Image (cartoon, rainbow over all chains, first blue to last red; front, side):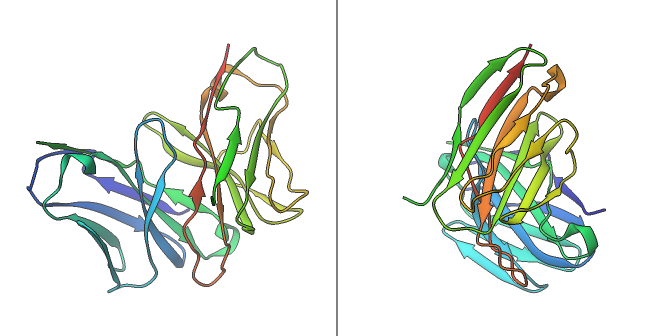
Amino acid sequence: EDQVTQSPEALRLQEGESSSLNCSYTVSGLRGLFWYRQDPGKGPEFLFTLYSAGEEKEKERLKATLTKKESFLHITAPKPEDSATYLCAVHGAGGTSYGKLTFGQGTILTVHP
Amino acid sequence: EAQVTQNPRYLITVTGKKLTVTCSQNMNHEYMSWYRQDPGLGLRQIYYSMNVEVTDKGDVPEGYKVSRKEKRNFPLILESPSPNQTSLYFCASSPGQVTFPLGYTFGSGTRLTVV
């Protein structure tokens, strides 16, 4: 069974204070690892897809990296508008997990001015 | 505008009264999926569909039905809703590339309360 664990559960930062969110996963054959941002009461918004260990992707103040067991979402010089819940999900390849996306519980990020 | 549209946004119903939550996408995506989101449990997949007439169970399919008769629509049916199905529901779609799957686009959500 695919599993995704995110840490920390909540993170409070001062504006400009860089940090990282962690996503550890176990999956039977990784087809893709996804990062999403979710604002309260809204649907998740797609950020990145990573397919293989060593891959990195960047978007504004966010950078996602992938190893064989975990992914990191680095936030550089965050602003209050970066406050949201960040979700990690894996798309497995084995057997009945084809087409199945498994999410972690998310990290609630709060950035104070 | 490319989007996934769910209706209704909010629904309060009584135990046992059949209901359908509609989902439609205008991006010609092959993959569609339903999730429920509960505090402390995160997003859990209910059902997913890889194409028309092809559906499969996710992690929490009990008490739900789906159908995929057209590529753009993927309704979620609760034949006899119970209070434990009170939740925030999301529909999502993806282009459905097998080797390198692409990210899902999510709808705005349906908040369902069963009393």
